[in-house]
Amino acid sequence: MVKDLVTEGKPLIELAGVNKYYPLGKNAQLHVLKELNLTINQGEFVMIMGKSGSGKTTLLNIIGMLDQLTTGEYFFNEKPVAGLSENEKSELRNANLGFIFQQFFLIDSLNVSQNVSLPMVYKGHKNSSYRREQAQKYLELVGIPEKEKQKTTELSGGQQQRVAIARALVNDPLMIMADEPTGALDSETGIAIMDILTSLNDHGKTIVMVTHDEDMTRYASRVVHLKDGEIIQEIHGKRGEVKS
Ligand SMILES: Nc1ncnc2c1ncn2[C@@H]1O[C@H](COP(=O)(O)OP(=O)(O)OP(=O)(O)O)[C@@H](O)[C@H]1O
Ligand SMILES: [Mg+2]
Image (cartoon, rainbow, N blue to C red; front, side, top):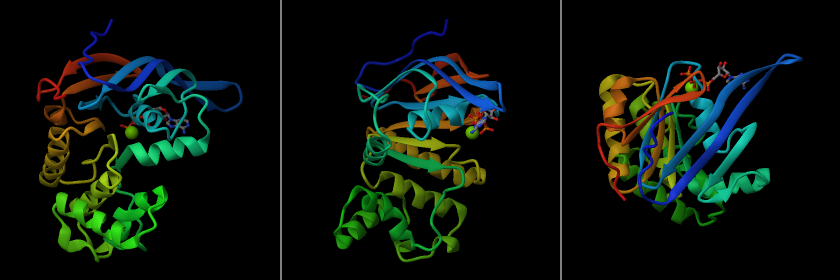
């Protein structure tokens, strides 16, 4: 039995008895997540650790409503996710979740400011000068205000990830979801990116991050270890207790 380390505070994510199967050919299926229970409260910095293939990305994609669980329950901000239409899910996602990926996923044909603005466009903000102002505010926060007009292809990897973080933040989401955000960066640049994420968490932003790098756990308030689709251990991260 894994010790329950969930801290006080409003639950943002509640997964109960979650299983995920991927179809494998005609009659076979791959059991990727197994009877998984996980609660993430507001203000936590939860790190999901585990070896390649243990189900980390699958779990993050389910939390981010990019993929569906097969059986089990999922409550987001205390509301059941089952039964929401794809449209409702994408609205919920766009308003409440900010995504950061290993490979940044910026759009080369748009400049930096336009990339950061995209979630506002999806949310329906029509005023382009408002969008530009907001984009600039978040580019300042991640330390690259001067890159506003630059092509994304002219940026270093670390700068591209800063753009992706600004983009993830621009709608002021309830939670940041990051899948190996430092995986494509050298260690020094990775530390700079982790410093940004830690500072966001210090200011109350909830973060769930996937990594296979044990060194990263020093940034977490809680570490969830996955093995073959099961949570085998939950421990407090080196940053200790969670802020409310
Ligand atoms: N769309 C899919 N269809 C079928 N199998 C899949 C699919 N996505 C992932 N898998 C399988 O599910 C298992 C878990 O994959 P997942 O991507 O969640 O692992 P991971 O822990 O993120 O690994 P990594 O550290 O390499 O990113 C793997 O065996 C993978 O091959
Ligand atoms: Mg993965």
